[in-house]
Length: 340
Image (cartoon, rainbow, N blue to C red):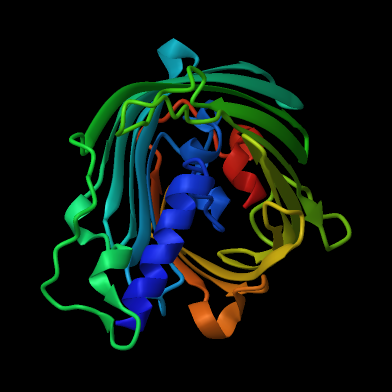
């Protein structure tokens, strides 16, 4: 029961003070449309599916889990890609739930040495909460703790559901083996309030950069064989909260291993992240593959790892070329997926 009370306190802290910050995925490279809508259609193939699940602070009472799923396809006649994404987050013992579905389009220009893509996203979000799950002070005995079956006299808001329009945009540039992008979500700063008092969701700004470095002499960055070091950094800002995730992956053919360092909103240490990624190619010409990813966050902030047991993410992806595809594997060296 103590964990239930602690979880309720944490939930109230997030709900009242954090101003509805978006969840950030440690495997940002396996949630590309969530990172930047301009990455729609920018991958090694014609059709792609991605799904990622995050379970945060699993040892605390109350659910804190997040799902991102997306599907996108490259359309030559549109000179870019179209896609659809779904996001769901459940937080705290009151099951503060957010569901979002959005459509995305990106337009790309460039050639073998340089490419630029520009993306737009438009979607709708539903936010709901179960007020009956909260524990208030008049339901707690100072000696025994929570009073089973007790009903609080607190006056609860009448509204438990909220719907709003939610747009985003982004740009991404690739020059040879370097990539730089920027994205902006919640452009209209939608009102998430349940009480009637305005509570604007701050815009989420992200800047992503990666560099693919061959480790063998004579190895071309467009090659799939051989070993590479891929340092990356993503900087987030939402309202008055800043966060940075920086690290590197070692890539050898279909195997990636990475280590990352992430800061918290105060600029201090938040977590060390360890990741393992496996690509399973289903055809000899590598035109179809399944990707499986696993990562774990070791909490380094003041709430520490012993109290939270960290956070774990599992991801699954699928990429495929159509038969007689117009996209050649050599040209696709400029795709964003070549960096991960």
